[in-house]
Amino acid sequence: MSTVKARATAVARVLLLLLRCLVIVAALFVSVQDSADAWCLLINASLFLLPLALLLSLTGRWVWSLSIAAAFALFVYGMGELKFVYFYTRLIVADWSFVTEPANWTIVRQYPRIYTTLAGFSTVLLLLIVDATLATPRSARLPRSLRIGAAVLALSLVGALTALRHHHTWEVWLDDANCNASNKCGVVSRLLFSLQIYEFEVPLHEGNPTPFLTAEVALGEQAKPALPTNPDVVLWLHESTFNPRQFQLPGAALPPLPMFERSPETRAMGLLRTHTFGGKTWLSEFSALSGLVPDDFGAHRARVFTTIGTRTQTNLFRVLKAQGYHTIVLMPTFKRFYGAGRTYDLMGADQILTLRDFPEYDKYPGDEWDIAETPRMAEAAIKLIREHRAGPNGAQPLFLYFLSVKEHAPYDKHTPINYKLDKVAIPKSLAAKLTDYVNRLVTLDGAVQTVNDYLFAKDARPAVFAYFGDHQAYYEEDSPPYRYKLPEPKNVTQFQVRSNYPVPRETPVPIMDIAFLPGLLVDTSGVERDNYFESLSAMRRLCKGMLDDCPDKTLVDSYKTRIFGREVGLFPVVE
Figure 1 (cartoon, rainbow, N blue to C red):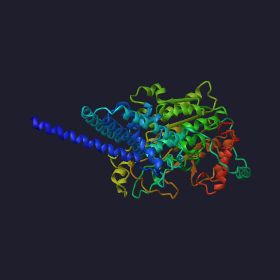
Figure 2 (figure 1 turned 180 degrees about the vertical axis):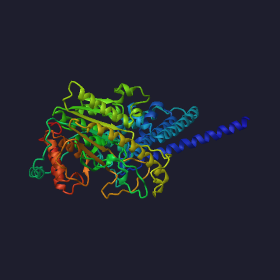
Figure 3 (figure 1 turned 90 degrees about the horizontal axis):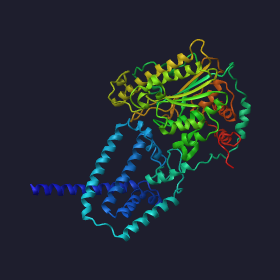
Figure 4 (figure 1 turned 90 degrees about the vertical axis):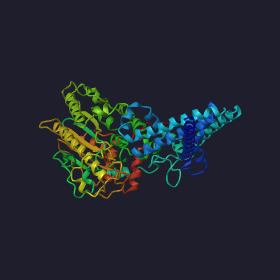
């Protein structure tokens, strides 16, 4: 028995040694990949070398140091890969605030693959600890001179990283730095260059504002609705919502969804150019509330809502508040989720609420995400409007901005296929997920109709009701082909603006940029506009709803030079 035990122990030790070597090789590989030049190689190698040098200097134990440094490198790399799978962007330094905020994990726990990955990593880490523990008695501590050398190496690497933090400029389109021909960076170079997110300057446009100003004057003043009082304005962000009839699904029998159709109260509707796909709702929120495009802010794009939105001196909240509106945000998540509550507050919202602020919903188990069923969000929105109108300040116009979240991924591939989607030439798993998705849209459609019926009941006071999809849904596989032919077809959803009073006809456009949505709302409500919203309104009409898609690039550059100029007052002037 002792011989068998000895052999089993020896085999286990060999397997643990092989695991250690495999993990170290993998850590070295993921550390140095996508290194375009020698400096990037040094930066990227720090993912493994820096924790190794620190651990060697502190412990003097080379097995422990190698194993823990390798595990750390693989963990950071894995976090970045998972983020890319679900959010289409890589890991950056600013994500630390996401990871350390417990409220943000309400979305992470929706994805079982993350748990599987963490379980696998935890198992490997445990085995490395066992290996290091067994190997330690046979490994003397490193001499003091070598430990001092390791400390010097760690300090040298920190100094090199500090000096090289601008070796590449953080780019726009991929929330990444342009490190090589494939626009990819290694893990540490991406993290290092992303520090530029914290170095904000108003975007510089050295064009000439005159062409835009001349065109704006020639355009003339837009007619306003004739109303005795300012209308209530309700804006509803539909998470992951996209009209499935925009897919090519021959043979399918999709249910009617009136929210996507024109109604007697519809004043404007159509396709909407968004600047994200499958996630990153905050990019659409940023545009829908500020009238700005995330791509104009370079390094800040990944967190533009919290870093730029809070700096705006004029936005949808503020322009309506200037006209006497009371502004409320109703969230389907924790107020701390992605720092959204703080952002709404700094942008000018008077009240920020979740369903936990309603006694009738607070009794349900679960967190804010769990209880934020779409019909409940609609009911809560109606209650807020009703209570405001019946309250002591009921004559004050109301702006309510709220979001629904239950349309968000993931979608169940085990859903029984319906709507004849099994007759469509798409994978069975996609047909099941689409069925799950359409089922959710049916629920959303009923909730939209509930709000619509309340706002536009007979003899109801003037109101604007607008809603839009923040981005398309992500099915964890390719979407079906689209019916339309547009650039970046995945970055398209739809919008609709309704009112219960006459509004000057909005010229139909093939697609409208989401950045023009706040200007369209202000125009529909008929409230007074500041200089920025005057420009926003004019540009929408001048380029038929398009912004970065606009073929007149001279006009686009002139417009952006205008709105980012100090005369408009969009951002504080720093002398």
